[in-house]
Length: 423
Image (cartoon, rainbow, N blue to C red; front, side, top):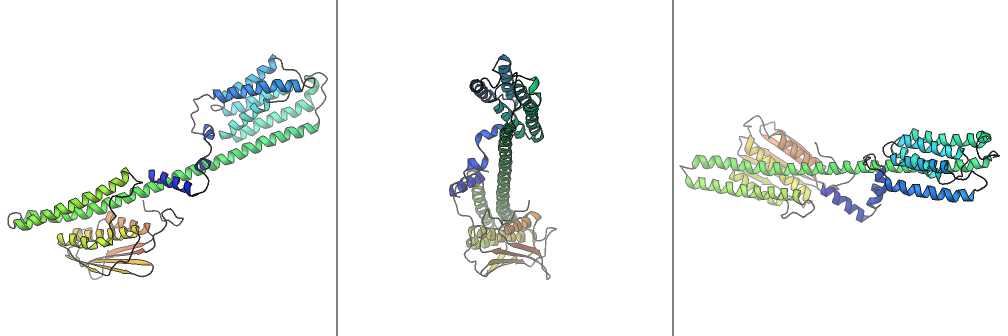
């Protein structure tokens, strides 16, 4: 969601490595497994071809008399190795072996050392980036083994004429070159895997944040609509029953319906506004326990007398909203599922937690005593998200009781001890 993206941008401003470093450089995406392999790497291959051809010409002048001069066959080998790089995205393994073979034939023919090794290095990198690690290593070892055979055994039958065996010190140079390529490739592979893991972790974190946001919105809509519709349902029944015998009482019921529906529309609109502009501040403050008298008045209009004991402390916004919604859902369940017309709400707190107790005297009027599964599950999810607990069940002497304990200190939204909501 946009909320998650905004959070990443804010963390980038507070410090730590920049986003481009955590995600990997842009050019690396060319090697990503999800890259479009239908595109031909014309520009990079053309650049490598120019470097190899021009560099080999200079190398031939520098090694004149020591190695065979460049002829059309040598240039054809160089061009063939470069042309294979066009296929490095689609067929990395054949390209790795093909470039190694072209370089081995080139060196076996006695042509000068030079940028031909660049073609082999790119073929090796391509196979490694495609996840073909064994093939990449095999191609590189094939070239090295071929070079050792040519330099120390087959030189007698290969050009240039009268060539002597290569000193073993030269093999150290070749070994250092191979080790450098291997080290660079392995470092690149490790860094790429790290980038892939970080991308997967960020995507998973974004999905978790999106799931939490959807759950929060679902809880808000359920609590708002369940309470308001329950009040409307009760008042609509009163209005229908008294429409002919007591028009004034029916008018009062209709007035309550209008007020409840207006309030429900306002709260639903506020919830939907967070979907349209998740980064914006809400237009109205979230409800809290300061609206408990209003909640008691709405319950009274539905025929439920509520007695409140205790006063709430100063609460964090998230805890205040959760406490209000828990009381609201509990009273709604009394209206809908209990035969009692009286309920008690008790608030108590110490230095660490707020304790809520909502009681009714029952009896239950249906199978869903105490409330439906969704309502109780929503209360538990709200409490668990804050590190609190909910206990709900029948009382030994009849009726139903809801006990909630919420910590007075809200947890960090993305802290390591954050509790995931139930799915």
